[in-house]
Each structure stands twice: as structure tokens, then as C-alpha cells.
Image: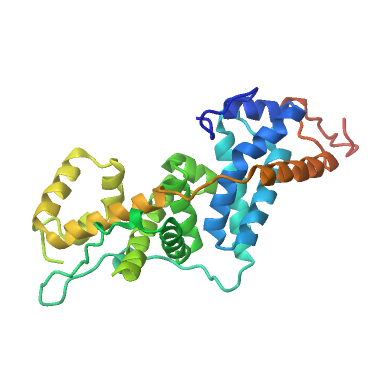
Length: 202
Length: 104
């Protein structure tokens, strides 16, 4: 699927664009930047949380993806390839951050339990809050702050699956992990994010 | 949480909620969760807020970059790429001779 809907010109699909890049066509470079820069910048900023880090991820990713595109086996998988480079850039950057040690999310900590006497837990139902009507900036800030509170190994799976729309198989390939692990991390990331949003909204 | 049935309590069903939301669950388990959430108010609230959580992430931020920024970035990257070795098609890669260590 093309990354940019309605794109016209000599490279209407990702496959066309990848083949242009692999052939070294000079006119393929700008469409490549136009198509992927907005995606990678948004991904990098949500993953890193800092504007400067997001911009560094963007430049690093575009250059590395372009320089190594000849190793791409399936030209139609250009988007997966670019996000693989971006994910590596994000994870490499976060490894430099000593303030964010690796954390594991445990399922038992994310699902509320009832009291010992058998009474069910109270779960505030904030699903009906008119979040969409909040100022766009406030809603985005609320969600992004909550996403940033997740450990990076879970955050990156959540962003690839739910923000970028990659399926489990593609996400696993991008991160070099098993599909089972990708599913486990996605589930725990969603549960942890639900808990974070609940704490901020109720 | 209180037991929904002798075999399926709320905690065990919670393990399947991402697959439930994504529509990847086997039909029998989906029916079980549908039935359970209709009878268990805490679980109903939990599922609704989890569904809302996923919706909020999927409502991704605006992605447009200013045209001038795209052009400047493209120009900077084109310059950097020109200074580096250009990408080569895989089929045309040259091999390195094992004996001499030089390009064959």
C-alpha cells in the first residue's frame, strides 16, 4: 500500500519508489523524502518525546534507509524497511538515555483485582468523556505524555501497531522479535496506557 | 474480581482483550467475553476504556510538514547522499576476492 494516498508522479507506489531508489534515479530522492519524512518525524517524536531527538531520528533514518536500500529484497516492503531503520535509530537513541532503565510490565499489575472479601474493583468508566472535543493540542498532549510513560520496548510496539497500522507480522519483522512477543508487548502496552489515561482523566 | 463462571474469571478473560478488540479472537471465546461483559459492570467499563485507549492512539497526530521544511530536508539529504557512496542494486554488487582481499 502506498504510504501517501493520492500520490501522483513517476513513483505512485512504494514499490515504484523503492525501484527508483535502487536504480539510483536522482529524481526518486525528493519523493522519498516527501513521502516518508512526515511519517518518521511523527513516529520519532512520539517515541523519543523530545523534538530535537525526533528530528535527529528523522534525518538519520532517511539517510540510512536511502544508503542501504539496495539491500531491500522486496521493493513493495519499502515502508516496513524505512520503519525498521527508524526503530533502530529510536532504540539506539534511548539506549544513550541512562535515565530510562528497561522495565518489564507484568500482566497481573495491569488488571485490577477485587478486594479479599470478593467485592469487585471499581473501574471508572471514562470512555464516554468527550475527548475528541477537547482542544486538539490538549488531547494530543495528554495522550503523548501517557504514551511516553510506557517502557520503550512496549511503547515502540504500540506505536507501530496502533499508530502506524502495521500488523503483528510486520511489527515483529521491523523489531526483529517473534510475533508472540510482539503480541504480548502490544497487549501489555495497551493495558498500561489505559491505566495511565485513567489516572489522568479521573 | 468476582468469578464469572467456575472456569473463566475476569482476570483470565483480560488476557484476551487485545485480540478481542482487534477481531482476532476465536468465535467461542468472543461470545464468552461478550456474555461476560454484559453481566459484569467492572469488566464492561474495563473493556470500554481499553477500546477508547486504542482509539486515541489510532487518532494519530497531524503529520504534515511545511513545504519549505520538506524541501530543505530533501536538499540537505541529497547533499549528504551525494557525498557518500550511492546505493547499488544488489545484483550488481561486486565481490571481494578471498585471496587478495581486493575487489574482484
